[in-house]
Length: 229
Image (cartoon, rainbow, N blue to C red; front, top):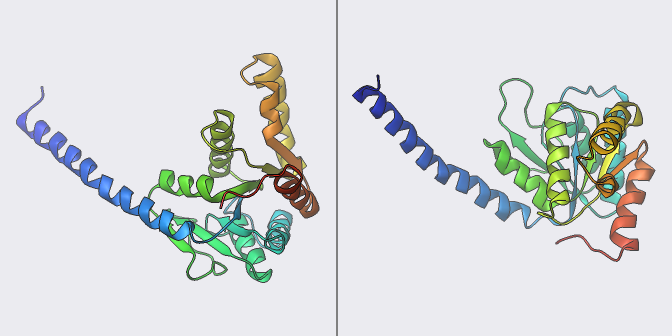
């Protein structure tokens, strides 16, 4: 039985939801204002749990350094692990180092290699994800967990459905990503025809920083396209 107390509780929830709109709007406005001034960047994604002595941390740092030397900035999620490696490489390379940090209970904290004026904090994952997609000229996706997969498949979906302009999506680490790509080809494509063959053209699989830079340069120079800033 729904009582007056229940009605009061639902009304309070509705009121809180309405006021949350202003907080969400504030995050969007702050993000748009800061990110629009930064210039062309490439986002680097990967696990927050990767340690500095592990090969993918070292490789992410090298990739980030090469990216800023090629004229782009680097955007990461602002935390430890691969995110820290990306910001560290950009910092060492003397380029733009952006961190889009999210408040999480355990493993997320700002890393020390983000430019002091380019560290943004978010409460909402979906606002943060908009910033990644809107202001990135490419995604470099290192080995990671659910969050990394979320960012990867959202970008593929938005490009596939023409909601955003195409940009390079580069998976780094054949030993990590090959099983997923094999499943996509054998099950999603060949087994059930749930995707089109040309959807696979959105994804590149590489193992070195040279390959990452070659793909970015090829996309924006040889194709006659330019970054969207």
